[in-house]
Structures are given as C-alpha cells and as structure tokens.
Image (tube, rainbow, N blue to C red):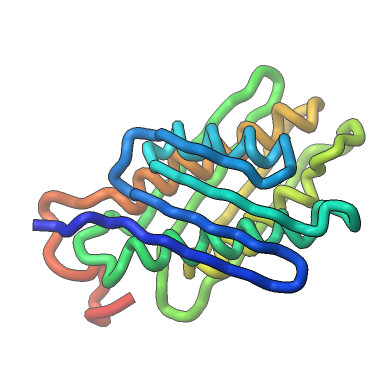
Length: 199
C-alpha cells in the first residue's frame, strides 16, 4: 500500500517568503497567492489538470520586479514534488501531453529521472508573440526552477501560437497532464522504476 504522498515546504530569503503544501493524489483543489496574478492563474489550472491539491502563499519583492518571486515559487513547488514523491516507488516515471489552446498548440514531455541529472529543454517555434506582463521567458524560468528542484528532465516545446496567454496556458496545462501521468502509480509496478534500483 502506498502511503499518502504529501509535503510541505517553506522558504524564506531576503527576497521572498514562500509556503507550499502539496498532495499528489488530490482532486485538483488549490489556493494560490503569489502576488503575480497570471502565475496564480497558471498554477490554479496546473493543480486542476494534474489533480494535485496545492496551497501556496508567496510574498516577494514585487516592487523590484516579478523575477525573484516567479523563480522561487518554481523552486518551492519543485521541492514539494520531490519530497512528496519520496523514494518514487511504483511511479510510472514518464509522462507526456499535447494540449491545444485556441490557435496555440503546446507539447510538454516530462521525464522523471531523479538521478542527479535534472534539466529543462525549452524550445519555441513561435516566431513573434505580443508583449505581455508574464512572458514566455518568465514561463521558461519558472519551469527551469521547478524541474531542477523536482529532479525532472523536462522537455517543453511551444509548437505554434500567436497569443502569449494562450501559448503559456497550453504549456502549463500540458505540463500538468504530463506530470499527472508521470507521478501516477503503476498497478503492476514493484519498487523503483529503474534497473539501477534507485532514482
């Protein structure tokens, strides 16, 4: 029997103060307050489409800009996933998803490989997109912090789109669904999904 996969993370620096609680086997409920409205929206739909229960409260130096808060929230959420996964027993490990959002189409492939080799490959084939308060670069920095601290090898591709909101939303939804698949329990699995015996 798999024990409850939950975690709590707190991070306090001179730039941010963040608290996260996570239930991997939830119902998609969330209470998100980062001070960055668009990021709140993205994390709310990330929880919904991944069936993760997430409570997240962040206070940051938004008088400077959104960079520190955006990155540190990614760090904390990544740490929360890593802690909740524990020894990674019986997880499917791999996940992928294609998600459309109106004219935008995103492909996020998530590979869980907790072997000390986390990385993010972020590629966009979108030629030009309109300026936005939360940019594609912001999304990339968030996902980099998240994947690094969760110990995930994550490949993210924005295949096409014109509206920044749609492109980023498609990426977050695809990442959520890929994560949902990757962290799910394989009923036929035994132990850690690696011939090495550990991840």
